Length: 66
Length: 344
Image (cartoon, rainbow over all chains, first blue to last red; front, side, top):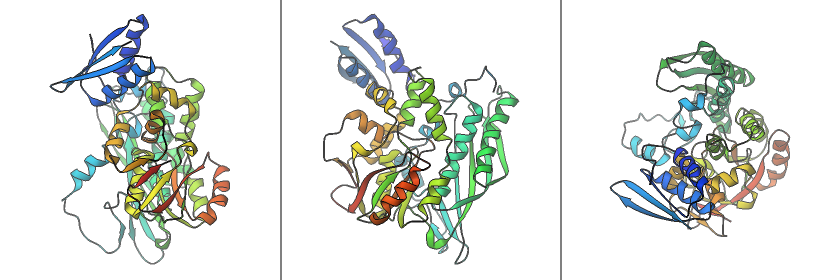
């Protein structure tokens, strides 16, 4: 699980982009703002992953799978 | 410039992306007491680019202020861009800037040379705009910021408001979009030097020539497309005018290198604020790619003019504008339909 809470755009996307260099089939990342949810969703989909989001007390967990 | 300073690293939000959202501002300013004065031709109520105050039958004062954190690393270019952006509000009203005051914050560790370079950029653009910088105010802060308060003049009969577009008008945009997305992607090292150079040059281009062109034609309304994006500023023009603005997505010019970063989620926070602000007051008549929509909501720094011109003059004005800019016809205006903005 990657933790990008406290980071603002574009750092969370840079974090997941770096992590994806290992080309695994599943990634999870936590963020704390809607902009990061939108941007990581776009990034995941662009890389061919399915993205699901769950919210918990203002934090969001995005699960990217393919 | 000093090699050790990466100005954009000192700024959390870049350029006009740092702007507080239009929706938030409207809420904040609602209910605050303001004096009434019949000479105030344009105030805050129509969310225009600058206020206009009539002095006599021939002269009105145009007043504006704009400043923001660094959008580029080169302090000299940052100064130029911030000044162009501030001066633009006067041009967008059809006016000519004349006097300006610096507004600046500096960090304790910025070198004197960096500060001087920012100011040099600002003074060069003010000079090009025939504007005198005659003072200012500088304080210490956690991040650098620079801009100008600008006073200009306009013939009261020729003020170009953002709320007077007419059905039948043609819409022209004078600078391509995508600046916010590209400057965000640049932070991830995804933008090449030639693209950075192109957008930096665009941001450091005054809207002076465009203003001088448009005042010779039957232009009904104008605004500059900055932090609130094409969609946000377009919405304000439509709502203020009681019309619907139609944007042809395939005609809206943008820097093509912004498209893939948009698809990859290198989109500034401000774009989402703009989308929230416009809310459900736009309608897509034809399918539009998500990245294209993101580009239309992308906050621009020192963006171009959105000009609503009588159809009979559109062709000639466009030719004149294209002599200096990458202007394009991007849509048209109709009577108000069920939404203020149509994307087709």
